[in-house]
Amino acid sequence: MSRASPCPALPQILSGQAPANTAAVVVEAVPGTRWSYSGGGYVAAQMLMTETAGEAFPDLARDEVFSRAGMIHSTYAQPLTKALWDKAATGYLSSGKAVPGNWHVYPEMAPAGLWTTPSDLARAAIAVQKAQAGRSHRLLSQKMAREMLTPPDRRLGPRLSAVR
Image (tube, rainbow, N blue to C red; front, side):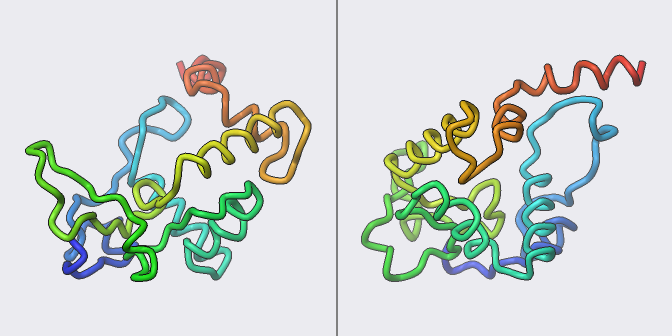
């Protein structure tokens, strides 16, 4: 959505109510029976985390992820704070024209709202690699890092056999 558009709250996004610009999020399969990317699932997770923590998602991500991984140039601020406008890359449409307003605002922060740099992404990858190797638990436990890096089809395999 453009920076001038009204920003929907998470319940409006999940239910598909205006000013959300997407349909309602619905369950399409029994959880654990198949893997499929779900931006709506990440919105639901975002809402669960913020309600449980009692903290806004950008603050929660900063405290629990960015600071632990050394990601000092990353934010989920939506809309992007004016102080960062001159540092933000301009988005482009397939026509080659700049996105009106230079970039979109994504209230669906968890799946779509990350503002970061290549260096910060590298810091995140290194933190996950260190966790997987058992050399650091600052961001994730070794067990969680291994689970995160296991392809979805391998995670679901044993569960699928029990469903058949």
